[in-house]
Length: 273
Image (cartoon, rainbow, N blue to C red; front, side, top):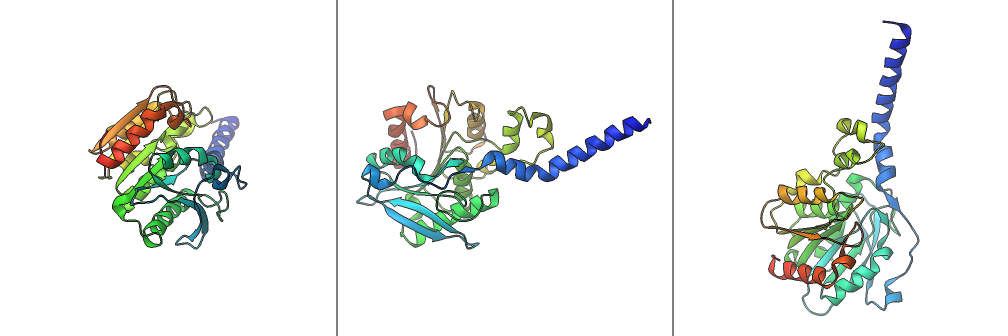
């Protein structure tokens, strides 16, 4: 074989090995987009809340907000998406409170006022700690806890539902896995078949037995609509799929309007829609 041909093969091999070894760092760069500063606080929206700090099993200090309501109301354990922090979800939380849901939203490690650096394993630990806080410190019964996740948060909500007792699972705009997401991205498409299936929601959701509501915007230009459909079809009954025709990735509750909150309430109260 000519020397040039051998050099090309060695170069390609070097590039492949380098990419494979560096991929976890590259993946984290594309997945996690935390911010530390808050755009607003619950007080700005005149919301009653508790400022919460709690610790994970690996000794990371996390921060969140608990929004109580009178009576024995269900609690949405809100796992947010990959960007910003809890302050960027306040308008959504206000609407949930108006519909009779208590809410506990927390920042993953590296987000907002939470310490540490984000990782897949770390975020799962964070979700477990948030659940444990509700049960052990707020004395919320498991059958009153709704595991709720939007976008990346769907992965944490699924993990919570897999490992903990919850009333039900609600995910919005969730992907099947990062491997599948790579297939939709120009930079990674050619290498996607070589990549590990991190945040493997498609595999995990098959093991969850509690009632599930899967919501996806038909015009989602970040996480393709078909991924929501695949998650639904892979799920065990009882399961329900709610397509919002006018919604993109981040505006499901806005585009869905009153019908969106009506379906959420019906599902949580009756475990069907």
